[in-house]
Image 1 (cartoon, helix red, strand yellow):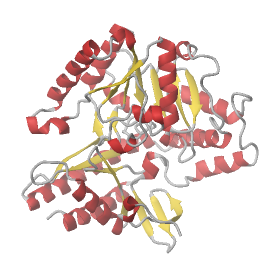
Image 2 (image 1 turned 135 degrees about the vertical axis):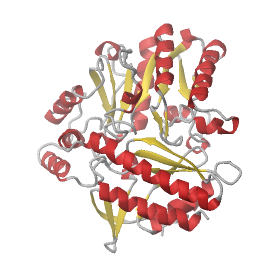
Image 3 (image 1 turned 45 degrees about the vertical axis):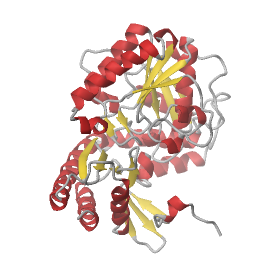
Image 4 (image 1 turned 90 degrees about the vertical axis):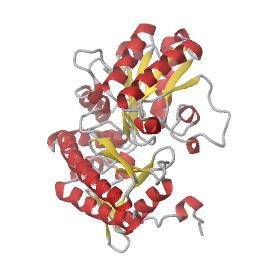
Length: 431
Protein backbone atom coordinates (compact mmCIF):
# COMPACT_ATOMS: atom_id res chain seq x y z
CA UNK A 1 0.00 0.00 0.00
CA UNK A 2 1.29 3.47 -0.91
CA UNK A 3 1.94 5.86 1.94
CA UNK A 4 0.95 9.48 1.44
CA UNK A 5 3.52 12.14 2.21
CA UNK A 6 2.79 14.49 5.14
CA UNK A 7 1.79 17.20 2.68
CA UNK A 8 -0.83 14.96 1.06
CA UNK A 9 -2.19 13.83 4.42
CA UNK A 10 -3.42 17.37 5.00
CA UNK A 11 -6.03 16.91 2.30
CA UNK A 12 -8.37 14.19 1.07
CA UNK A 13 -7.57 14.07 -2.62
CA UNK A 14 -10.44 13.77 -5.06
CA UNK A 15 -10.13 10.63 -7.15
CA UNK A 16 -11.60 11.96 -10.37
CA UNK A 17 -13.21 9.53 -12.79
CA UNK A 18 -14.72 12.05 -15.19
CA UNK A 19 -14.47 15.71 -16.06
CA UNK A 20 -16.76 18.04 -17.97
CA UNK A 21 -16.23 21.77 -18.31
CA UNK A 22 -15.33 23.14 -14.87
CA UNK A 23 -16.66 20.05 -13.08
CA UNK A 24 -14.90 16.92 -11.85
CA UNK A 25 -16.78 13.81 -10.70
CA UNK A 26 -15.38 11.40 -8.16
CA UNK A 27 -15.80 7.63 -7.79
CA UNK A 28 -19.11 8.10 -6.00
CA UNK A 29 -20.38 10.35 -8.78
CA UNK A 30 -20.20 13.46 -6.60
CA UNK A 31 -19.50 16.73 -8.47
CA UNK A 32 -16.66 19.06 -7.55
CA UNK A 33 -16.39 22.58 -8.93
CA UNK A 34 -12.83 22.65 -10.26
CA UNK A 35 -11.28 26.10 -9.98
CA UNK A 36 -7.76 24.69 -10.45
CA UNK A 37 -7.95 23.66 -14.12
CA UNK A 38 -4.98 21.36 -13.66
CA UNK A 39 -2.93 24.42 -12.60
CA UNK A 40 -4.19 26.45 -15.51
CA UNK A 41 -3.88 23.70 -18.11
CA UNK A 42 -7.44 22.75 -19.05
CA UNK A 43 -8.16 26.12 -20.61
CA UNK A 44 -11.20 24.96 -22.58
CA UNK A 45 -12.48 22.90 -19.65
CA UNK A 46 -12.34 19.18 -19.05
CA UNK A 47 -12.93 17.12 -22.18
CA UNK A 48 -14.18 19.85 -24.49
CA UNK A 49 -15.92 17.94 -27.32
CA UNK A 50 -13.98 19.70 -30.08
CA UNK A 51 -10.61 18.98 -28.44
CA UNK A 52 -11.60 15.37 -27.70
CA UNK A 53 -12.68 14.81 -31.31
CA UNK A 54 -9.44 16.27 -32.67
CA UNK A 55 -7.32 14.08 -30.40
CA UNK A 56 -9.34 10.95 -31.15
CA UNK A 57 -9.06 11.50 -34.88
CA UNK A 58 -5.32 12.08 -34.65
CA UNK A 59 -4.70 8.96 -32.56
CA UNK A 60 -6.21 6.93 -35.39
CA UNK A 61 -3.85 8.29 -38.05
CA UNK A 62 -0.48 9.23 -36.47
CA UNK A 63 0.37 9.32 -32.80
CA UNK A 64 3.96 10.51 -32.96
CA UNK A 65 6.41 11.70 -35.54
CA UNK A 66 9.65 13.17 -34.21
CA UNK A 67 9.83 16.62 -35.73
CA UNK A 68 13.59 16.82 -36.07
CA UNK A 69 13.21 13.78 -38.35
CA UNK A 70 9.87 14.27 -40.12
CA UNK A 71 7.13 16.86 -40.33
CA UNK A 72 3.44 16.13 -39.79
CA UNK A 73 0.29 18.10 -40.59
CA UNK A 74 -0.79 18.92 -37.02
CA UNK A 75 2.63 20.50 -36.41
CA UNK A 76 2.42 22.56 -39.59
CA UNK A 77 -1.14 23.64 -38.83
CA UNK A 78 -0.30 24.57 -35.23
CA UNK A 79 2.67 26.63 -36.35
CA UNK A 80 0.46 28.49 -38.83
CA UNK A 81 -2.25 29.11 -36.20
CA UNK A 82 0.30 30.34 -33.66
CA UNK A 83 1.58 32.85 -36.20
CA UNK A 84 -1.86 34.49 -36.03
CA UNK A 85 -1.68 35.08 -32.26
CA UNK A 86 2.01 35.45 -31.42
CA UNK A 87 3.33 38.96 -30.72
CA UNK A 88 4.58 40.83 -33.76
CA UNK A 89 8.08 39.81 -34.78
CA UNK A 90 8.04 36.42 -33.05
CA UNK A 91 7.88 34.30 -36.16
CA UNK A 92 9.87 31.20 -35.23
CA UNK A 93 8.96 28.53 -32.67
CA UNK A 94 10.63 25.62 -30.92
CA UNK A 95 8.40 22.99 -29.30
CA UNK A 96 9.00 20.96 -26.16
CA UNK A 97 6.81 19.29 -23.53
CA UNK A 98 6.74 21.28 -20.28
CA UNK A 99 7.19 24.73 -18.86
CA UNK A 100 10.53 23.73 -17.38
CA UNK A 101 11.78 22.62 -20.78
CA UNK A 102 10.62 25.91 -22.28
CA UNK A 103 12.58 27.77 -19.60
CA UNK A 104 15.71 25.76 -20.33
CA UNK A 105 15.29 26.30 -24.08
CA UNK A 106 14.88 30.06 -23.59
CA UNK A 107 17.97 30.15 -21.37
CA UNK A 108 20.02 28.18 -23.87
CA UNK A 109 18.96 30.41 -26.76
CA UNK A 110 19.67 33.63 -24.84
CA UNK A 111 23.15 32.54 -23.81
CA UNK A 112 24.08 31.21 -27.24
CA UNK A 113 22.64 34.20 -29.13
CA UNK A 114 24.37 36.81 -26.97
CA UNK A 115 27.52 34.96 -25.90
CA UNK A 116 26.82 36.24 -22.38
CA UNK A 117 26.59 34.02 -19.26
CA UNK A 118 24.21 35.71 -16.83
CA UNK A 119 20.42 35.76 -16.46
CA UNK A 120 18.56 38.30 -14.32
CA UNK A 121 15.39 36.90 -12.75
CA UNK A 122 12.89 38.63 -10.50
CA UNK A 123 11.98 37.91 -6.90
CA UNK A 124 8.97 35.63 -6.62
CA UNK A 125 9.20 34.21 -10.14
CA UNK A 126 8.55 30.54 -10.89
CA UNK A 127 10.03 28.94 -14.00
CA UNK A 128 10.14 25.21 -13.23
CA UNK A 129 11.76 22.45 -11.23
CA UNK A 130 14.55 21.09 -13.41
CA UNK A 131 17.99 22.20 -12.26
CA UNK A 132 18.35 25.22 -14.55
CA UNK A 133 14.69 26.21 -14.24
CA UNK A 134 14.79 25.84 -10.45
CA UNK A 135 17.96 27.92 -10.36
CA UNK A 136 15.95 30.72 -11.95
CA UNK A 137 12.98 30.24 -9.56
CA UNK A 138 12.63 32.37 -6.41
CA UNK A 139 8.98 31.91 -5.45
CA UNK A 140 9.89 29.52 -2.63
CA UNK A 141 12.79 27.44 -1.37
CA UNK A 142 10.77 24.23 -1.73
CA UNK A 143 11.39 24.37 -5.48
CA UNK A 144 15.18 24.60 -5.18
CA UNK A 145 16.24 23.08 -1.86
CA UNK A 146 17.96 19.75 -1.29
CA UNK A 147 19.75 19.23 -4.60
CA UNK A 148 22.46 21.88 -4.64
CA UNK A 149 24.64 23.07 -6.21
CA UNK A 150 22.33 24.94 -8.51
CA UNK A 151 23.28 26.52 -11.82
CA UNK A 152 25.52 29.57 -11.63
CA UNK A 153 25.04 32.79 -13.56
CA UNK A 154 21.65 33.71 -12.05
CA UNK A 155 21.15 37.03 -10.26
CA UNK A 156 17.90 38.15 -8.63
CA UNK A 157 16.28 41.59 -8.81
CA UNK A 158 13.14 42.79 -7.01
CA UNK A 159 9.70 42.49 -8.62
CA UNK A 160 7.33 45.41 -7.92
CA UNK A 161 5.26 43.43 -5.43
CA UNK A 162 3.53 45.91 -3.09
CA UNK A 163 2.51 43.17 -0.64
CA UNK A 164 6.16 42.65 0.28
CA UNK A 165 6.51 46.33 1.16
CA UNK A 166 3.12 46.93 2.73
CA UNK A 167 4.63 47.38 6.18
CA UNK A 168 6.61 50.34 4.83
CA UNK A 169 3.45 51.93 3.47
CA UNK A 170 4.59 51.59 -0.14
CA UNK A 171 2.13 51.47 -3.01
CA UNK A 172 2.73 50.05 -6.48
CA UNK A 173 4.44 53.20 -7.72
CA UNK A 174 6.95 53.16 -4.87
CA UNK A 175 7.52 49.42 -5.28
CA UNK A 176 8.17 50.02 -8.99
CA UNK A 177 10.65 52.82 -8.27
CA UNK A 178 12.47 50.50 -5.89
CA UNK A 179 12.50 47.58 -8.33
CA UNK A 180 13.93 49.62 -11.20
CA UNK A 181 16.49 51.38 -9.00
CA UNK A 182 17.62 48.03 -7.61
CA UNK A 183 17.89 46.62 -11.12
CA UNK A 184 20.22 49.50 -12.04
CA UNK A 185 22.25 48.80 -8.92
CA UNK A 186 22.42 45.11 -9.80
CA UNK A 187 23.77 45.90 -13.27
CA UNK A 188 26.34 48.16 -11.65
CA UNK A 189 27.46 45.82 -8.86
CA UNK A 190 26.57 42.18 -9.63
CA UNK A 191 26.14 41.49 -13.33
CA UNK A 192 27.87 43.79 -15.79
CA UNK A 193 25.53 44.45 -18.72
CA UNK A 194 28.19 43.02 -21.04
CA UNK A 195 27.83 39.74 -19.11
CA UNK A 196 24.02 39.81 -18.97
CA UNK A 197 22.22 37.76 -21.59
CA UNK A 198 18.58 38.31 -20.59
CA UNK A 199 15.94 39.44 -18.15
CA UNK A 200 13.48 36.61 -17.43
CA UNK A 201 10.14 37.63 -15.92
CA UNK A 202 6.48 36.60 -15.57
CA UNK A 203 3.81 39.20 -16.43
CA UNK A 204 1.96 38.04 -13.31
CA UNK A 205 3.81 36.17 -10.60
CA UNK A 206 2.27 32.69 -10.49
CA UNK A 207 3.57 30.57 -7.65
CA UNK A 208 4.85 33.83 -6.18
CA UNK A 209 1.33 34.91 -5.23
CA UNK A 210 -0.64 36.06 -8.31
CA UNK A 211 0.90 39.53 -8.33
CA UNK A 212 0.54 41.47 -11.62
CA UNK A 213 3.37 43.63 -12.89
CA UNK A 214 2.64 47.05 -14.34
CA UNK A 215 3.25 49.05 -17.48
CA UNK A 216 5.99 51.30 -16.08
CA UNK A 217 7.98 48.36 -14.74
CA UNK A 218 7.92 46.49 -18.04
CA UNK A 219 8.71 49.66 -19.99
CA UNK A 220 11.70 50.12 -17.69
CA UNK A 221 12.88 46.58 -18.40
CA UNK A 222 12.54 47.09 -22.15
CA UNK A 223 14.41 50.40 -22.07
CA UNK A 224 17.31 48.95 -20.07
CA UNK A 225 17.42 45.86 -22.25
CA UNK A 226 17.62 47.95 -25.43
CA UNK A 227 20.26 50.23 -23.92
CA UNK A 228 22.54 47.34 -22.98
CA UNK A 229 21.79 44.76 -25.69
CA UNK A 230 20.05 42.46 -23.20
CA UNK A 231 17.20 40.17 -24.28
CA UNK A 232 13.79 40.16 -22.58
CA UNK A 233 12.29 36.71 -21.96
CA UNK A 234 8.61 36.75 -20.99
CA UNK A 235 7.35 33.61 -19.24
CA UNK A 236 3.74 33.21 -20.43
CA UNK A 237 3.47 29.59 -19.27
CA UNK A 238 0.60 30.31 -16.88
CA UNK A 239 -0.57 33.68 -18.18
CA UNK A 240 -0.91 32.86 -21.88
CA UNK A 241 -3.85 31.83 -24.08
CA UNK A 242 -6.43 34.14 -22.53
CA UNK A 243 -5.86 33.38 -18.86
CA UNK A 244 -5.53 37.06 -17.85
CA UNK A 245 -8.40 38.38 -19.97
CA UNK A 246 -6.08 39.23 -22.83
CA UNK A 247 -4.46 36.71 -25.12
CA UNK A 248 -1.02 37.17 -23.53
CA UNK A 249 -0.43 38.39 -20.01
CA UNK A 250 2.12 40.96 -21.13
CA UNK A 251 -0.52 42.56 -23.39
CA UNK A 252 -1.74 44.38 -20.27
CA UNK A 253 1.62 46.15 -19.93
CA UNK A 254 2.67 46.94 -23.50
CA UNK A 255 2.42 50.70 -23.82
CA UNK A 256 0.96 51.88 -27.12
CA UNK A 257 3.71 52.75 -29.57
CA UNK A 258 6.44 51.20 -27.43
CA UNK A 259 8.74 48.42 -28.63
CA UNK A 260 7.41 44.90 -28.13
CA UNK A 261 8.10 43.42 -24.73
CA UNK A 262 9.47 39.94 -25.45
CA UNK A 263 12.46 38.96 -27.53
CA UNK A 264 11.80 35.38 -26.44
CA UNK A 265 8.45 34.17 -25.13
CA UNK A 266 7.75 30.92 -23.28
CA UNK A 267 4.38 29.17 -23.49
CA UNK A 268 2.80 25.93 -22.22
CA UNK A 269 -0.14 24.97 -19.94
CA UNK A 270 -3.32 26.27 -21.60
CA UNK A 271 -2.18 25.75 -25.19
CA UNK A 272 -3.57 22.20 -25.56
CA UNK A 273 -6.29 21.76 -22.92
CA UNK A 274 -4.33 19.14 -20.98
CA UNK A 275 -2.07 17.53 -23.55
CA UNK A 276 1.65 18.09 -22.87
CA UNK A 277 3.18 20.62 -25.21
CA UNK A 278 5.20 23.78 -24.63
CA UNK A 279 7.61 25.95 -26.52
CA UNK A 280 9.39 29.20 -27.06
CA UNK A 281 8.88 31.84 -29.74
CA UNK A 282 11.42 34.33 -31.05
CA UNK A 283 12.30 36.06 -34.29
CA UNK A 284 13.76 33.84 -36.97
CA UNK A 285 16.92 35.95 -36.81
CA UNK A 286 17.35 35.36 -33.09
CA UNK A 287 16.37 31.69 -33.27
CA UNK A 288 18.98 31.12 -35.99
CA UNK A 289 21.68 32.00 -33.46
CA UNK A 290 21.02 28.81 -31.50
CA UNK A 291 23.85 26.37 -32.06
CA UNK A 292 22.89 23.57 -34.46
CA UNK A 293 21.63 20.51 -32.62
CA UNK A 294 21.50 22.22 -29.22
CA UNK A 295 17.70 22.32 -29.03
CA UNK A 296 15.63 19.19 -29.35
CA UNK A 297 13.69 16.47 -27.57
CA UNK A 298 12.04 13.17 -28.33
CA UNK A 299 8.42 14.06 -27.65
CA UNK A 300 8.32 17.75 -28.59
CA UNK A 301 5.45 18.63 -30.96
CA UNK A 302 3.82 15.23 -30.52
CA UNK A 303 1.17 14.85 -33.23
CA UNK A 304 -1.76 14.26 -30.85
CA UNK A 305 -0.72 17.18 -28.65
CA UNK A 306 -0.41 19.41 -31.70
CA UNK A 307 -3.89 18.39 -32.90
CA UNK A 308 -5.29 19.18 -29.45
CA UNK A 309 -3.51 22.54 -29.46
CA UNK A 310 -4.99 23.45 -32.86
CA UNK A 311 -8.45 22.52 -31.57
CA UNK A 312 -7.86 24.55 -28.40
CA UNK A 313 -6.96 27.66 -30.37
CA UNK A 314 -10.11 27.18 -32.45
CA UNK A 315 -12.30 26.90 -29.34
CA UNK A 316 -10.68 29.97 -27.75
CA UNK A 317 -11.49 32.01 -30.86
CA UNK A 318 -14.91 30.57 -31.71
CA UNK A 319 -16.30 30.71 -28.16
CA UNK A 320 -14.81 34.10 -27.26
CA UNK A 321 -12.92 32.68 -24.30
CA UNK A 322 -10.50 35.59 -23.96
CA UNK A 323 -13.46 37.92 -23.60
CA UNK A 324 -15.16 35.48 -21.22
CA UNK A 325 -12.02 35.36 -19.10
CA UNK A 326 -12.08 39.15 -18.78
CA UNK A 327 -15.79 39.32 -17.94
CA UNK A 328 -15.87 36.39 -15.53
CA UNK A 329 -12.67 37.66 -13.93
CA UNK A 330 -14.29 41.00 -13.14
CA UNK A 331 -17.28 39.17 -11.67
CA UNK A 332 -15.03 36.90 -9.61
CA UNK A 333 -12.83 39.68 -8.22
CA UNK A 334 -15.85 41.82 -7.30
CA UNK A 335 -17.46 38.93 -5.44
CA UNK A 336 -14.26 37.93 -3.68
CA UNK A 337 -13.68 41.52 -2.54
CA UNK A 338 -17.15 41.65 -1.01
CA UNK A 339 -16.46 38.41 0.85
CA UNK A 340 -13.07 39.71 2.01
CA UNK A 341 -14.64 42.92 3.31
CA UNK A 342 -17.25 40.94 5.24
CA UNK A 343 -14.61 38.63 6.73
CA UNK A 344 -12.37 41.51 7.71
CA UNK A 345 -15.26 43.34 9.37
CA UNK A 346 -16.22 40.18 11.25
CA UNK A 347 -12.64 39.61 12.43
CA UNK A 348 -11.97 43.33 13.03
CA UNK A 349 -8.67 42.86 11.17
CA UNK A 350 -7.36 42.67 7.60
CA UNK A 351 -7.37 38.86 7.48
CA UNK A 352 -7.79 38.86 3.69
CA UNK A 353 -5.37 41.65 2.94
CA UNK A 354 -5.94 41.76 -0.81
CA UNK A 355 -7.86 40.22 -3.68
CA UNK A 356 -5.79 40.70 -6.82
CA UNK A 357 -5.13 39.37 -10.30
CA UNK A 358 -6.09 39.69 -13.93
CA UNK A 359 -8.80 37.80 -15.79
CA UNK A 360 -9.31 34.32 -14.38
CA UNK A 361 -6.07 34.41 -12.42
CA UNK A 362 -7.13 35.68 -9.01
CA UNK A 363 -5.47 35.41 -5.61
CA UNK A 364 -6.73 36.00 -2.04
CA UNK A 365 -3.87 36.97 0.28
CA UNK A 366 -4.31 35.98 3.93
CA UNK A 367 -2.60 37.84 6.79
CA UNK A 368 -2.79 37.25 10.53
CA UNK A 369 -3.92 39.78 13.11
CA UNK A 370 -0.39 41.22 13.19
CA UNK A 371 -0.14 41.65 9.42
CA UNK A 372 2.20 38.69 8.84
CA UNK A 373 1.61 36.11 6.07
CA UNK A 374 -0.91 33.52 7.29
CA UNK A 375 -0.48 30.21 5.47
CA UNK A 376 -2.36 28.28 8.17
CA UNK A 377 -5.60 30.20 7.60
CA UNK A 378 -5.17 30.14 3.83
CA UNK A 379 -4.84 26.36 3.90
CA UNK A 380 -7.71 25.95 6.34
CA UNK A 381 -10.06 27.95 4.12
CA UNK A 382 -8.88 26.11 1.01
CA UNK A 383 -9.52 22.76 2.69
CA UNK A 384 -12.93 23.88 3.96
CA UNK A 385 -13.84 24.94 0.42
CA UNK A 386 -12.75 21.51 -0.87
CA UNK A 387 -15.00 19.80 1.69
CA UNK A 388 -17.87 21.87 0.33
CA UNK A 389 -17.06 20.88 -3.27
CA UNK A 390 -14.88 23.79 -4.48
CA UNK A 391 -11.34 22.84 -5.52
CA UNK A 392 -8.71 25.57 -5.18
CA UNK A 393 -4.92 25.89 -5.00
CA UNK A 394 -2.41 27.59 -2.72
CA UNK A 395 0.46 29.84 -3.82
CA UNK A 396 2.61 32.66 -2.45
CA UNK A 397 6.08 32.49 -0.96
CA UNK A 398 4.62 31.61 2.46
CA UNK A 399 1.66 29.67 1.09
CA UNK A 400 -0.54 32.58 2.16
CA UNK A 401 -2.52 33.01 -1.08
CA UNK A 402 -5.51 30.96 -2.23
CA UNK A 403 -5.83 31.17 -5.98
CA UNK A 404 -8.83 30.86 -8.28
CA UNK A 405 -7.91 29.63 -11.75
CA UNK A 406 -10.96 28.07 -13.44
CA UNK A 407 -11.17 27.01 -17.07
CA UNK A 408 -11.90 29.87 -19.45
CA UNK A 409 -15.29 28.34 -20.27
CA UNK A 410 -16.61 29.04 -16.76
CA UNK A 411 -20.08 30.57 -16.79
CA UNK A 412 -21.59 33.43 -14.80
CA UNK A 413 -23.68 31.00 -12.75
CA UNK A 414 -20.67 28.78 -12.03
CA UNK A 415 -18.70 31.77 -10.76
CA UNK A 416 -21.66 32.59 -8.52
CA UNK A 417 -21.70 29.02 -7.21
CA UNK A 418 -17.98 29.23 -6.46
CA UNK A 419 -18.44 32.53 -4.63
CA UNK A 420 -21.19 31.03 -2.47
CA UNK A 421 -19.03 28.07 -1.50
CA UNK A 422 -16.03 30.32 -0.84
CA UNK A 423 -18.11 32.64 1.32
CA UNK A 424 -19.27 29.68 3.41
CA UNK A 425 -15.70 28.38 3.75
CA UNK A 426 -14.32 31.77 4.79
CA UNK A 427 -17.12 32.28 7.30
CA UNK A 428 -16.42 28.86 8.82
CA UNK A 429 -12.72 29.62 9.36
CA UNK A 430 -12.25 33.39 9.69
CA UNK A 431 -14.13 34.55 12.78
